[in-house]
Length: 86
Image (cartoon, rainbow, N blue to C red; front, side, top):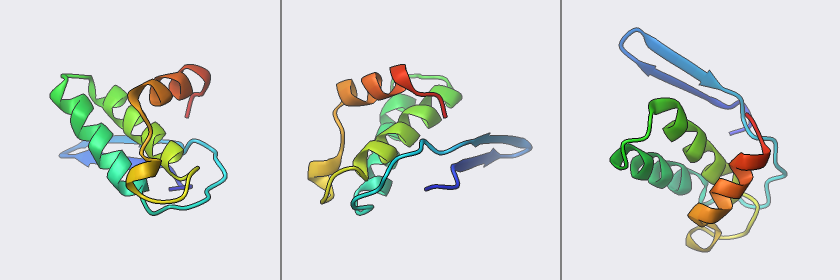
């Protein structure tokens, strides 16, 4: 969400700022976040990259109405990340 994310596992803590976007519909944000987080994990991406991709996907998902239809493509996430830092 707008407050960003906080990751914790054991003593490890990471905090990332949110990507600033104007939300249209937040319905699919969580699904996009979890889907991209798991995909990056399964691909062996480092933790910070997993979290950034998931956060970017969630941010992009709120730009469109609906749930499944609003989930961004991998290319959309890549372009978004290439131009923004949380």
